[in-house]
Amino acid sequence: MPLKLIDTHAHLQAGVFESDLDALVACARAQGLQSALICASSPDDWDAARDAAHRYGFGYLLGIHPFEARRTRPADLRALEARIDAALADPHFIGVGEIGLDRVVPLAGDAAAEAVFAAQLKMARDRSLPVSIHSRKAHDRILAGLKRFPAASGAVHAFNGSPEDARRFLAFGLRLGFGGSLTYSGSLRIRRTLARLPAGAWVLETDAPDMPGAGRRAAAESRGVPPRTEPADLADVCREAARLRGITAEAAAEESAAAACAAFPRLRRLLEDDDFFLGI
Ligand SMILES: [Zn+2]
Image (cartoon, rainbow, N blue to C red; front, side, top):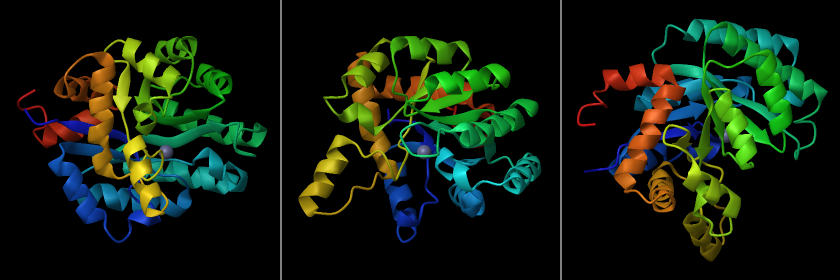
């Protein structure tokens, strides 16, 4: 049985894909990719994220990434709200993202960034939309935001936290996203966490073009070029997730897809239109 893969977090609108995305998506489809959630980063790429989703029949999320928080003005947030309301009629529109906080990157986790994050959480909450959250060294602040504006559902992408952090996010109804970091034997905490999570709690992602896996990084280093995560890399992440959980790759893909549909209900509707569920 071929894998049926859903990439729950990717940036296929990124400039590094400009010249060859058709070929990369075709390659990923050959590996079993059924759909991907394309996360926007700023007003500059809202159109591109939507257009890429329409081109390939994928989903997209609209939001402002914490790295963009420092240049975000109230007018940008008003524009985002208007874009979200207009997108509700679009079956490819899935939710609000990528939003969050990052306490490693300067100004991506300060009070101003928290205000941008909270405003977007509120937009999602008011419309019962799911969120795709970036949380780096900021789990407590993210959870404080969620306490004020609980999300309907969604995922914490590239999860890297303690079992207690995992438990707290799951208690808020969020799933945990795992990508290329899983494929490094030294990623002990991430690998141990995924191995122990119940089915339904975790989802697969690439974060393409970011978060290269071990194979992708080694290949890039041997050629002396910067690594670029590609959509087809999801199959490697899935196989590694399966090994860690002691199940088949097909079963891992299925667990992740089911959790992705629960986390992002509009994705489920989009896939139903595509007959994704035939044969599952
Ligand atoms: Zn991302």
